[in-house]
Image 1 (cartoon, rainbow, N blue to C red):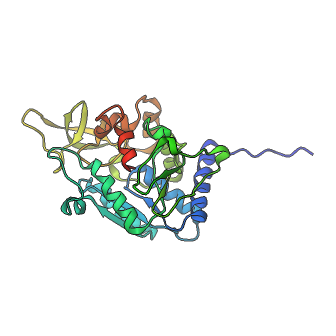
Image 2: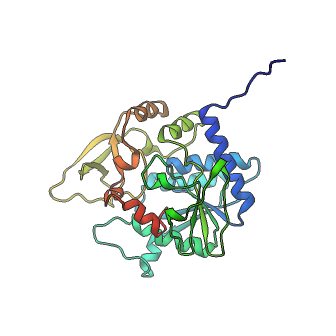
Image 3: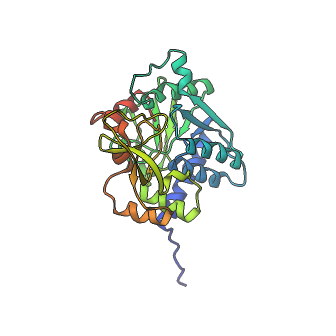
Length: 302
């Protein structure tokens, strides 16, 4: 008797892997948390987490590390999503660390690097032992070195030489008190995978991911949104353009791209044709040096 075979589609296989990772963490760790910025990757991450434990509620809270310079649309989406899903939302604010003298803000600089101090403070205060993040290996070369279970020492530091093998997708969550594991269920996804999944699952996103009219200023080869956080210099001019954001973060260093893609299907077509990752094209904080991201990751960054 010939039995028909069963083969998962590419997206279904990625989804199954991510769901397995969520369940593995829930079975292994005592105090996990999911980093939720309101961006597309964290929205997909939350969707997968809810699918992993449905019909039970999420067995861990959400954590947003807020620089204080976020886009209004993203903060509105963050709060609305937490309320809609019934998830417990924790917000750790960079401003609190600046006020307490734990972080020092540079004049004219972005607050993105200061998130490390705030993230590590939140992990310590809540004694989180596993921290879900939405990083993907295709985003940036330092992130390509990550394991799915990324060990961090008691100072939150990352050492690529101390990472553990994950042969046959077997994960090692062993850690001592004060140490923790960063967990990346989207490691093997690409930007195109993310958008195809958003389209398939009708995942809700902040409106700025789709084409819209916005006042922008060109700076260092990028288009930055002219907000209360980005003040054009006398030599810079502002103008209106039809743009969308490929990634979102601190408004002072997150650029947008000119685009007419106002639906997931159109974004998919646009993404399939590009040769630059979203971080390489639209994140000014990743241009500080050749090893900028890796240096920050060693210090405890996302």
